[in-house]
Length: 132
Image (cartoon, rainbow, N blue to C red; front, top):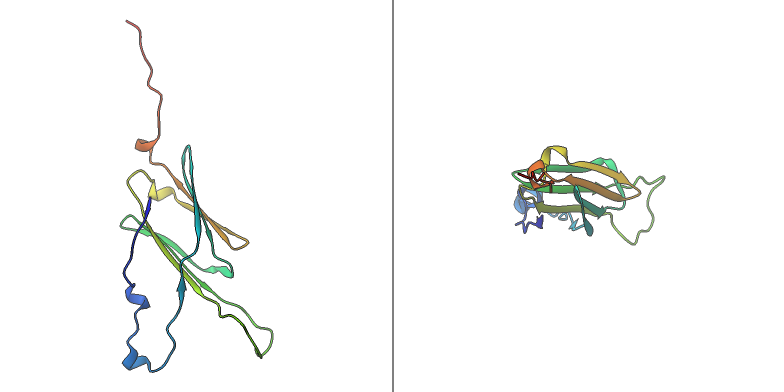
């Protein structure tokens, strides 16, 4: 699996003459750790502040996409703030050794854990030897 270098996605581009002075949305590349296990890969991405409802993980044309929006509910009018919530976006190009139909995702405490199992053809198998 390799990270795919992606041009600015269409949904991120803005038509400034129609939108006026609306600020451009910010996207951050979430840091990831990738582990190779005997039966597949595990990708752990840090996405703090993301709720399950605002997380989109999908595979299209062998490209795994992680897209998430942060959202903070404020109990009252905000008087002062030092940071703005950001959105996350990252893509990885998958090879044919990943079983795309069995990818699973789990979000816990701001860490997204993706399990990418190996395809049956890519798994090591023992070959029985017969003695003649």
